[in-house]
Image 1 (cartoon, rainbow, N blue to C red):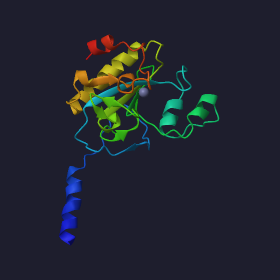
Image 2: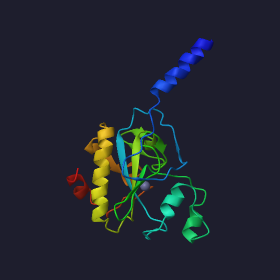
Image 3: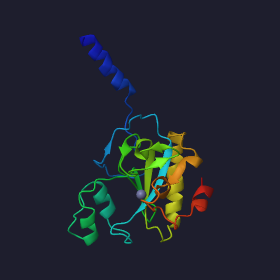
Length: 193
Ligand SMILES: [Zn+2]
């Protein structure tokens, strides 16, 4: 019995992968993540937008929100999202700087109830990237450049994320989510890949 336990624990050690943090990004570890059901099964990239408060750019509200440190008394909208625990793997700020909140091999909480080509719960098998922005305000040149670079880095690590497996939050949660919105130029993004 003792031997069995030892073998089991060795097995877990062998299969557990090291946490994947990208180089050249700002690291802000979020507590809002858990294990993927199958760590080998990462084959979707989901593009989102966020701004806090909505439509206001700059400041550190998003990173505070994703790390459960936002002071919800500071703005009426912050009250509405009090107690909400979410995250994304990555955030691309307006100036193209990138913050990573969750290791890529872990399951970030960005997609919610969702479905891609018949597979539900996209958080299980996807990587989520937030662009600081709104559905209607054009994203910056720096954001397109940074997003394309991130996408390429991620595709190197996860070759199953082919270009046809990059999608928007609105596509996997239609009727519930609208981001990254009409402002996101998919053609421009895809031309950079
Ligand atoms: Zn979203």
